Length: 356
Image (cartoon, rainbow, N blue to C red; front, side, top):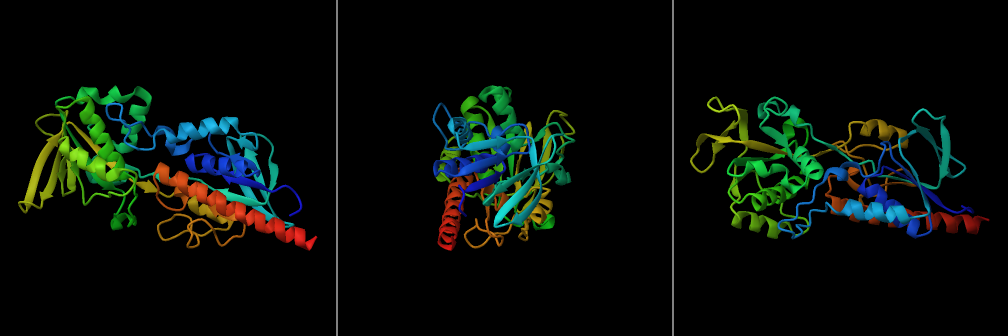
C-alpha cells in the first residue's frame, strides 16, 4: 500500500457515523455509504427519556452529537441513497460497485471495509396472541419512542389516571421463534419509558410483566430501583394472550399465570407496550454473501473472538449488525472497530513500504 489509505463504512447509523469519524480523525479517507436518504438509522427514533430534566443515560442524545461532528469533518465523503451491488478484490484493494438511485453504476476502490448495517426491530405481528396490529390498545416500544420523538414528552399525557402494561422479551429469548438471545436493550428502555410516563402523570398505573430484568448498561440498576420506588409494579409473568376487553372496547385484557397464587389471572389495561427486541436485518444473508461473510446461529454477522474482525481480510464489523447492542454500546464498539481497522491499515502500509 503506497497510496493514502481509504476505508468504506457501510451503514450510516450511530455505529457507522462513529467509526467514520474515528477513522477520519486518524487521517484516513472515508466513504460513508448509506442506503436511505438520511443518516442516523434506528437511532433517529430513540427519544429523550429525561425525568424532570434529569438525564436517564438512555443514549437518545448521542446521535445528534455524532451528526454534528460529522458536519465538521472534511475527510468523509457521504453517499446517501447508495447501495453496494458487488465487491471484488483486485491488486490488494477492494473494489465496490455502487448504485445511487437511478444514477449509473460507479466503482470505489478502498483498502478496508467496515460494515455497520445495523438491525431491524422485531415485528410484533409475529406474536399473534398479543394482538398487535389488531387491537388499538396494543403498541410497541419502538412506536412509543417514535411518537415521543415526534410529539415531545407530552405525547402520552392523556394516560393520566389510566393503567399501562409493558410486556418484556417480545421477540427475544424465544426459542419457538429461533431467537434464543437477549436483545440487551428492551428492559432498559421499558423501565426508562415507565419512569418518564409516571413523571408526566404521577397517578398513572404502570406494570412491567417480565421473565427477569436485564440490569446491565449505563446506570440501569439505579433506574430499576427508582422505578420501583416511584410505583412501577413488577410482575414475574408474561401474558399467554391479550384480547379486547368485552366490557370496555377501549381496553385490552391480559390472561396470565400468576406464579404467586399458582393460577391464571385476568387484568385489563388502557395501553399495552410490547418491548420488542433487536433482529438481524432481513437481508443479512444476502449482504453476507456479497462481502464473503457468514452468519452466526441467530443470523447476525459472524466474527472472530474480538467481535470485530472477520475471516475476510480487510473487512470489519461495528455495532448491532454483529450482535444486539444499545446506542452507547454500539458507539463504543464502533470506536474499537475503527481502531482495529486502523491497525490493519498501518500493518498493510508497513508491509507495502518494506516490499517496495
